[in-house]
Length: 330
Ligand code: PBG
Image (cartoon, rainbow, N blue to C red; front, side):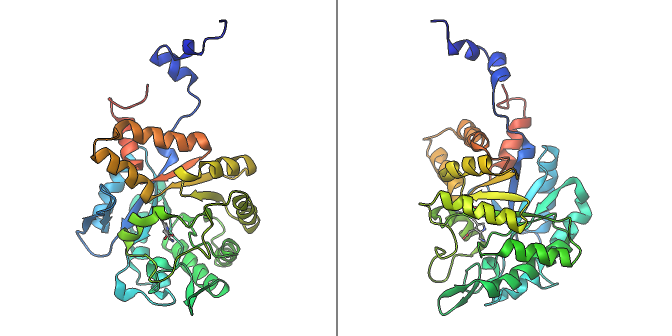
């Protein structure tokens, strides 16, 4: 036996030297559920450890993250039912607390943080869909105008990166044109390129009360059976002007992450979604899995599959373990 692969596994320093994948806090993006008002901090029952928070709680949360090297945050607004309507008009209302709080966050933190928005109608829609609903059909082209308006309002509020999660056809182009027209040529678009009609969004919809009031999202989100179609979506997003391509969910779609990485030279992002995080939390709570080792293994796996950036509810947890003396860096 001339070849013995165990030689490079013998000690921690040897293993560290040959490790192929490195996951640093700067590769992670932490989602934040933003609530209106003051002193709001309510835990999401189906996603323990994650909270709906008001501005006064979000500032120290981000300060803690910054201290750990976590500087990218993706923000989702919790919209009260009475503000929702058919056309999601609150999404671009000047009075919108999401936009106002982002203005304050950017004034406070400046370019020490990058804030990513969510462009979709569902949090603001009385129908709970990502586009306008008419007679049970989700209308594509009329929704684009609203998504474009929403994006411009977000860019104006100070978001660094605009994140369309709606899956309407042509939205990246519509948003790019609207941003450019308003002079926001330097705002990037992180497109949810391959977003699947997945069962793993449950806890997120609980967090925002954004579940569809009727029907499902299968006429706009992708079929979990499809792989080549993701490459088609990626091609369109590139042509339309996307700056980042995202795969969502992440864990159950690692083949898609790997395909997009091989096929595109844009940064690849994956969204380790709420249900995927909840599975691990539930198993850990039962004592069936060890969170401290399973969580970093999960995130490392996504990086290894080809994700340059990972959106995960475990970002803060990972960053604090990464920085602690008992961390998992060998
Ligand atoms: C909707 C949106 C969803 C998520 C992010 N943006 C859910 C959906 O499509 O219903 C899910 C994220 C998660 O589950 O963590 N625009």
